[in-house]
Amino acid sequence: MHCASASVAVVGIVFLSMNLFANDPLLKGCQSSQPPALCIYMAASSNGLISLVLVLTLLELCVACSVIALWLKANCCHLRKAVSSLSNPGESRMPPNESKEIQS
Image 1: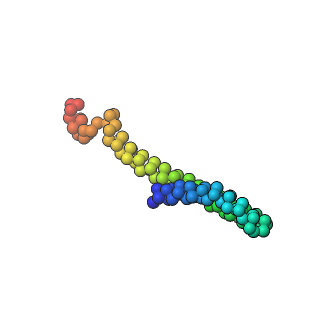
Image 2: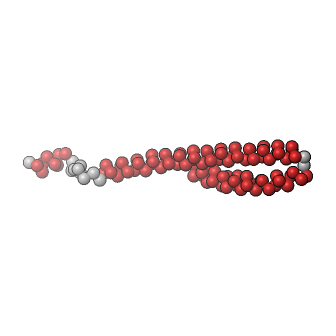
């Protein structure tokens, strides 16, 4: 689930970045056909909203990657502890009764 969220965030960042850079030439063409005040307002509001959504998408990517890292850490460390406790060379695998009989 979180991997899908991270993937969608990466795709969103790419599309929003392309839109932000492609939006500038379109707004320059607006100045010849519309009143200049309207074009300035449209450029500022459009670029501002796209930039805000881009920042929020970056935040989504950071949160998704952090959750993935925490999930992996919790699951991988649990398996490592189980394996390392079984393969500890200092522990005897004999039951306590048998080890006393061998020592006698």
